[in-house]
Length: 123
Image 1: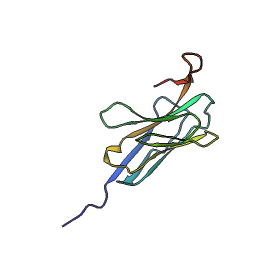
Image 2: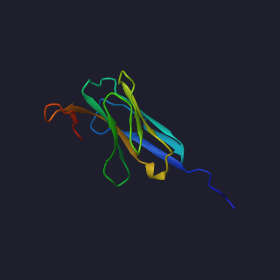
Image 3: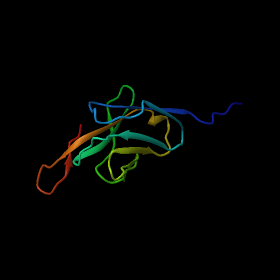
């Protein structure tokens, strides 16, 4: 009897209309590992949010997480943003086959619709 100990999960990184970010072309992992996906954005300005999206084959982009200046997390991921904001790392805990997708790191300028609010333009 043969047992499968792990399944490879291929995470591809890409850029969508944003020449300000650079990422490695791909990363491979086994199921249940924690994956760190780096993104460099050395020309980021003070009012640009860092957004991460993923796109599974034959599907549209799906929002993962975004942040401005601080580390942030949600049920899907953790976004690590160092104080200089020149890079960020998307951390995916316990990846599985459903996480196999193209991951996009993009920058978007914050805007204000009304006094006292901080909103971000969604792509």
